[in-house]
Each structure stands twice: as C-alpha cells, then as structure tokens.
Length: 249
Ligand code: NAP
Image 1 (spheres, rainbow, N blue to C red):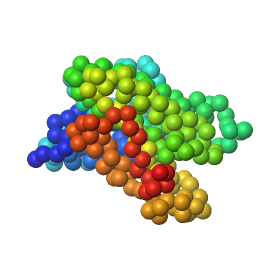
Image 2: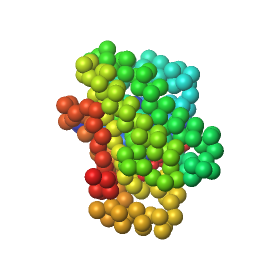
Image 3: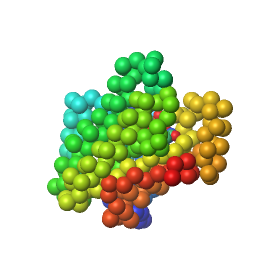
C-alpha cells in the first residue's frame, strides 16, 4: 500500500475532532504515522487505531494544553523520544471566545491568543529542531479567512489568526535554508462544532457571501494539509492557502 505520506511522521494538535480529526484520518489513509496531541484523550481512539492498522500504519495519542510551555516542552520530548523525528507538524488546535471588544474580558483575549498563537510558537520551537537536523520538514499553521479580512466580534480570534500568518512567513524565512517549509491554511467557513454554534441567520448570511454558496467540509482542509505536507508542495513555503469557496480573493 502506498500514499503521499508513506512512512512520514505527522504530529497534529487538536486531532480528536473536527478539522484535526479529518487531518489525522487523511494522513493515516496516506500512510503516515500519526501523533495526535490534544487536551484530552480521544474517545474515538480505538476506531482510529483500527483505521491505522487497516492502512498498515499507527496512531498515538498524547495529551497536553498546547498553550502551556512546561507541558509542551515535556510532551514534545516524549513524542520525539518515541518517534525519533517528526516530518510534519500541523498546528491545528484552536478556540473561539467571541464578543465585542468593548465588553471582552481580558481572560478571553489571553486564552485565545495563547491557545491559537502562542501554541504554534511553542510547538514549532520544540519540533522544528529535529526537522532542521534531518534537513526536511513541513510545518502547517491553521489560520482562518477572518485572520486575513477581520470579523466584528472576533478581535481576539482574528488577531491570533493574523498573528499566525506573520509567524508562518517569518519562520519560513528563518528555516528555509534547512529545507523546512512553513505554510498556513486559511479555511473559510467549515461545517464543524465551531460553526454549528452560529445562528441559522448568521450561517445563511455567510453562505450568501460565498461564491461557491456552501460551507466547506473538514475534508477540504485535510486535502489542503495533504498537499502542503507532501512533496507535491516541495517548492512551496511562506504561503497562505485560502480554502474558502471564494469568500476571500
Ligand atoms: P474544534 O472542533 O473545536 O476542535 C479543536 C480541537 O482543538 C479540539 O480537539 C480541542 O480539544 C483542541 N484544543 C482546544 N484547546 C486546546 C488546548 N489548549 N490544547 C490542546 N488542544 C486543544 O475546532 P475546528 O472547527 O475543527 O477547528 C480547527 C482549527 O481550524 C482551529 O484552529 C480553528 O480556529 C480553525 N478554523 C476553523 C474553521 C471552521 O469553520 N471550523 C474556520 C477557520 C479556521 P477539546 O475537544 O478537548 O476541547
């Protein structure tokens, strides 16, 4: 059996549900050995292990709060001790704490910035060393269309997702000479627990603004990750890949 990621080791954060789960699934189907780092244990781990076995590969689950430096340093060491090296890092874990800025609690600002942005800094710092040493690697940061164009009620979230774009481009320039690529994906509205929280009226308003007229699927993002993770994109770094049905051009 062969796939685009045959034998590659992929570490994804927040891989127990939503877009992260689709990424883990797609990676396994393409032959990758997957390390899922999430806040809690994936309740669906047994079926993920079966999927991996069916594809002659493996999945391992680890837990940590990706915004907590001590936990990230410790869990990344544990993962690297087990894996030897990581070929692909997908900084996917993220949260929203929406609200108009005038009423936003400082904790909601800090939590979003720390979990969405600081986590990518911590994870990339700990994992990129082994990539640089082996002279190959791909880091993929999960931004958002609203990090590019802004969104009322999401100053904290948009700042974190825009911050990821600056981190992506700067790190791509820092470590490109070691053949480690760093790119971002900016999903539009993807049907998931995060968008399910939006009212029907808000959902319909967004759909009206999307040239393709529908929300995307988690699998659309997993396909973009597959491209950026594989050698199909070996000459692509420092880029922001919009996967948004044309919402932003
Ligand atoms: P989701 O369903 O809410 O899943 C997020 C995952 O991240 C969960 O497994 C969650 O764990 C984990 N997580 C949250 N905080 C964490 C922490 N501190 N440490 C470790 N793991 C943590 O989200 P999603 O919709 O799949 O979104 C995935 C990514 O895509 C996010 O970065 C999001 O901002 C981005 N995005 C999503 C959309 C969309 O339309 N859905 C659009 C643009 C961008 P728990 O289950 O334990 O909380």
